[in-house]
Amino acid sequence: MDFSGTLSILLAICIMCLLLLSTRKKKTWSNLPPGPTPIPFLGNMLQVEVKELIKSLRKLSETYGPIYTFYLGSRPCVVLSGYKVLKEALIDKAEEFSGRGDFPAVQMWSHGNGEARTDARTAQSPGPLPVLQDLESYRRRLLFTFPKIMRHVPGPHRQIYQNYLKLAAFVGEQLKMHKEILDPNNPRDFIDCFLIKIQQEKNNPSTHFNDETMSKTTVNLFFAGTETVSSTLRYGLRILLRHPEIEEKLHEEIDRVIGPHRSPCMEDRSRMPYADAVIHEIQRFADIVPMGVPHTVTRDIQFRGYTLPKDLNIIPLLCTAQADPTQFKNPTCFDPSHFLDENGRFRRNDAFMAFSAGKRVCLGESLALMELFIFLTTTLQHFALRALVAPAEIDITPESSGLGSIPRPYQFCLLPR
Ligand code: HEM
Image (cartoon, protein in one colour):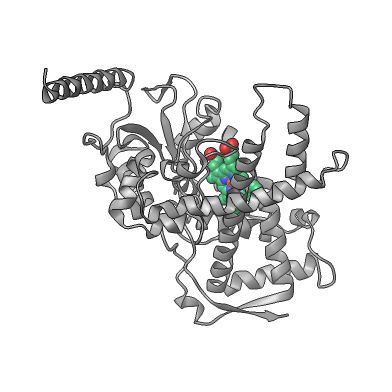
């Protein structure tokens, strides 16, 4: 048989295998929620504007309802929207929805290792997400749809990987320094504790406590814990510039509870319901991780009449809980009274999902809330904010609703009080 004949037979075998595989998959995926019709290989990626992914996904939920299927290439994802469905999944069926999904575009850098292995957050240059936002539309689509292939294709999207390598090199230096001066009886931080654990587990061949996991986990915590808090603060200050009357009330509460002579501390928070409510409202309104981080289903389950097979990717559109009109009286406005009762006391709202909810809720939630409280109150204790333009001219809508929301760039003055 000549070469072309062999090639044809090989091709035919490949096509038959692909067809067999796709039939097998369709069997397990036969009772998924309805959604837009995918096209072969590309799925639904041509039906959304990737730069406006959140808006596109929200729009699709208007057509297909609070639970629908969306294909990233040939991989189906189930998109959940609205407080009720998110609560049913993330809280009432916490165990079943607690698998960690892949964020294809971001997975490039961590190869699935480390805590929050594919944790993608709002980031500013040189972080991973503005890179994504700056990429031209077709490249972004390819990155989302074929992450594994795109990892090897040259182009600006590889900047994500370069940034990761720079940060990994910095963390590598830190790990080296920590190893040199480690005192097992006196751990100073996360890295020290991890090093001690590596020592304790060194004879366990199946342990996850090794240098590689430590390095990737540290990098991931760095990504997860820095841009999130700083973007929220930048967003918060911009909102306060737009609403000087709210800043005024914060000054009043800070002066009354803390005064000018000592630093704010966490014990103050319970006596500062207005500041607490403003911080929660900043997080609700800013909504910096609008589509959460993907989950997967941990076993085959029935959910709202559909069969969701094990390992199915789930996209929790957290923004839809945070802006759910059945839970917040004024969802599109910045209104701290969303978190205050009629007596001015702080009131929780379960639809507040800035940190997600359930078993995979953000690991850094309490640290982040602490940072936001201390940074904001300390700043306002000493300074008054002054905008360079009239407050009414300040646009507090986010700059992008791609993967994350970030405040528009701005300048302002801090005047000593
Ligand atoms: C305003 C600040 C922050 C916001 C809005 C935020 C939001 C989130 C969200 C929405 C998730 C996804 C949860 C899920 O999969 O359902 C998450 C996960 C995570 N966050 Fe945060 N986060 C913030 C700060 C932090 C900080 C300060 C740290 C640590 C230093 C941190 C570490 C993590 C980690 C490790 C995960 C993954 C947990 C897991 O996979 O189980 N985050 N965060």
